[in-house]
Length: 297
Image (cartoon, rainbow, N blue to C red):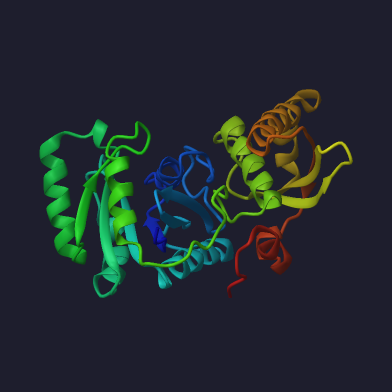
């Protein structure tokens, strides 16, 4: 049978549900999900299969007004993900009444030649009439070719969206093996999982000026994996927040991350975390290489 394969760029403002949607389309977790906005940093790809079609999903960082170098690098990665796409999805949180933050994204999309699909997400929490009004207004603003109403969290509408994306993919040999679900290296994936736990367990106590940097990732003779990572923070005063009383918080973060990584990899994982204070980490070029982003001026 003829194979089809193509790239879909998943764009949207922070917290629109892009990572949840990518995970739902792939059928397992490939991107980190957090209640905090701007959790996606590197342009991780999920790989979804539909019969003889491979859909490569570029899960891009949320597009927003960039102020710091890290923000600019994330936005650059988002647009880069759309540059070679066979289709562009714009994921919008349907619950939000004010949508002026979407202006620059809609303006940029208006003239793009790719097939543009509007995805209104979280429709299970939105009345029908405002949904239809939003769909009409947004379609006019950026000339979308199609609109889908979904809930990435419950899965409503996701199979229909996946079937449509599969139908849009060009005839081409698959780019990845059948059992591969992401192009993220295991080393980067391990960092993303730890970072998700940082956000999940520290909530608003720890601001965005934290990162997880890979130190080493080695396979032991018994088949298990040994992972060493740095949790990088900007100020000494944040150290106590990450460590917790007697190191209890760091231990809980490490244990949860280790468990999840072991589940994904299917092998035993030995995870070692340590906290490092590095005031200007977000300006350091090597940090961007570590997390798979381009260093932008």
